[in-house]
Image (cartoon, rainbow, N blue to C red; front, side):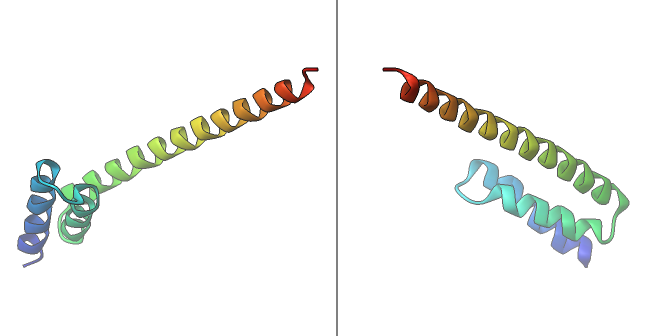
Length: 81
């Protein structure tokens, strides 16, 4: 029963990639449901989680670098006579 529910949610999430909808939310939900029953789904969920964490870390680093560049530019402008 868990396989059917998880598979259905996962397939809906895959369909939402091309259809308007929150595929980014539904696909991990389907994998989480399947991961309670199947080891392959658990490994796939962990891999997606790891990739997401790497992406989030890179995003935060780029955001911090942009903010620092803006601060430095503001200081340079303020220092000019």
